[in-house]
Image 1 (tube, rainbow, N blue to C red):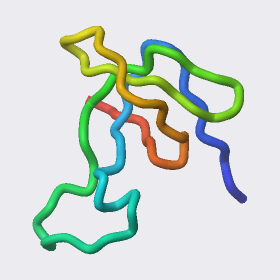
Image 2 (image 1 turned 30 degrees about the vertical axis):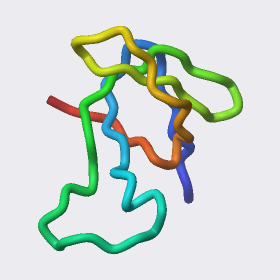
Image 3 (image 1 turned 180 degrees about the horizontal axis):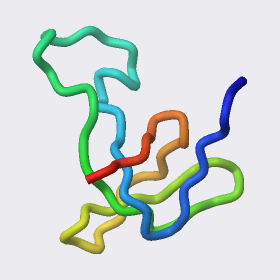
Image 4 (image 1 turned 60 degrees about the horizontal axis):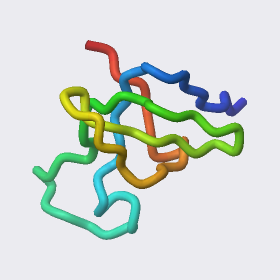
Amino acid sequence: MVRPRQFAEGDLVLKAAPHVMRGKSASKFAAKWEGPFVVKEANENGYYRLSESDSDILLAPVNAKWLKAYHP
């Protein structure tokens, strides 16, 4: 069973690193996740706009499949 990933505005999430999204290999010590980021906008179609926790600059929209919840 697959549970859909849904996040609300204000949630902390981790974003997959660019090399993971492109399907490229990197050093085995390269980080696979970046973040944490704050969800600023949540769209119904599964895309989210993120910003770093200390800034209000929005990043490009990211699909939910490239995000996972961050638990401090």
